Image 1: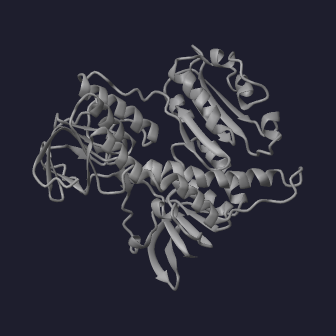
Image 2: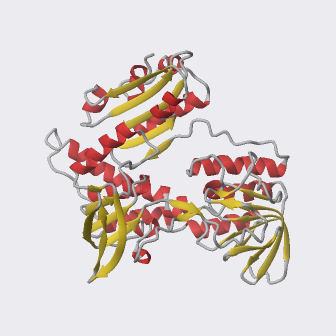
Image 3: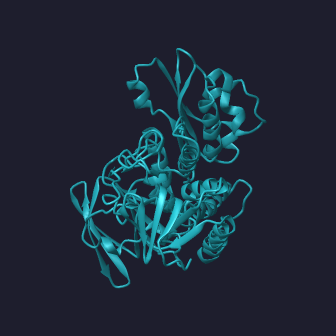
Length: 455
């Protein structure tokens, strides 16, 4: 837009990801004047630099792994990934998003501005030469990679960079033991790279069940991934066409020569350039401090949703959608809509996949409830033996007093489906008996549910 004078809107949205788009569109449909601002290509992280392109690459890695399971069982040879072809395919999902998002805003009558936004007072936003005043403001700017604080940190690739690599490095290290590093490590290893994964303590994937994480680590080691736990990265430097990573592993010197080193050690709310102090918007390391209606506790005209919000919700795309629906309802009606974070599923798209929902075993033990823990090795069950899945494991935590499902944790190639069955049951208040009594098609992973739910 070529607007150069001060402009007033009913709503200003900062960020064009799913949360920002949802609220902007909902308010515009009700006749509000809406402006939306983003310094990066429109469309947000998930669709262009996160979940969606990652899953395209992970899908190829999964096919390689499944094919390998059948080698000698009817499949004659292993498949292989052509990285350039895979990236070209990935680009078919991402390349048109900024333009189509702009067209969407244009057609809806939403004014859009490319640039970095910052508060100049509690209701005014500066974007380059533009000054925008909003009756209400939504902060939906997502998250950015955390600062790690070691010498040479500026040489790190970020997740965006990995998803755009034209050529896969022969040797690659991932710093961080979260799901992003695990997923990317699996993709790179299945594509033929030598992979190192570095984590600063002995508990990677801390938000997932430790028994299943241990089994997943073992499986990933089988395909050649080297884990460096209890390892502190101290320095990254250039060496010819590659890099040298130096640190301490269990207190002993570590030196790795790699063609690339990728930051996968966590993300933090993207607020640094917003000048929230000038806007009277309180925030902390979790993000914008909000009440149960996602309204800023210090500036009643400001809301926040998605990864930038300091709400109890996990940093996941479905939570951004959940929170955006609540914000839209609260803006258009009154502060009456509270997001329900009950039973939020998390999935690491490695292979096997690792999925989690509800309480961990430790949380259930500490709750004071009388619980039953079903820890099952399903590797020899027909469903998984027929496709060579090993390990295949589940841990389901039940409340013995009333049959409530407290938590479920799955490790296998069908985890993405199984965890969604649990999500439906837990959000709708179904008991273990009711879910177990559901008739699923046979033979499928659903038809095994009853064995996971025995009280």
